[in-house]
Image (cartoon, rainbow, N blue to C red; front, side):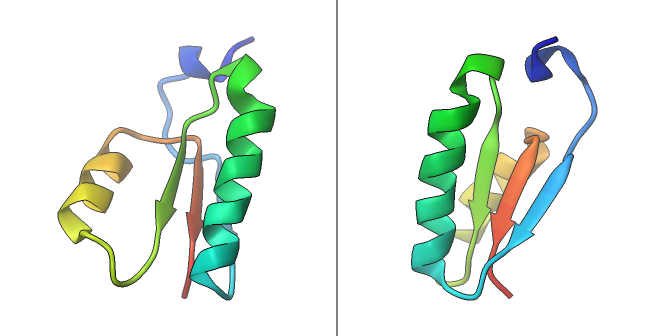
Amino acid sequence: ILLAEHLFGVFVLVVTPTRQLAFQLADQFHALGSSVCLRTVVVVGGMDMLKQTKELVARPHLVIATP
């Protein structure tokens, strides 16, 4: 079953200590999850909050964030 068929929101929250690690993990999840249409979002400080909010409203399957 493709994850894209599920209408629910976030399945996984990954909290990382650094912004660099968050983006590295997002790249890896994107590569590994492309066959099942995995949607990922990175939420970190210092980035456009409106853009990140819009990405969260789209109900990704995986959220990678920094504290």
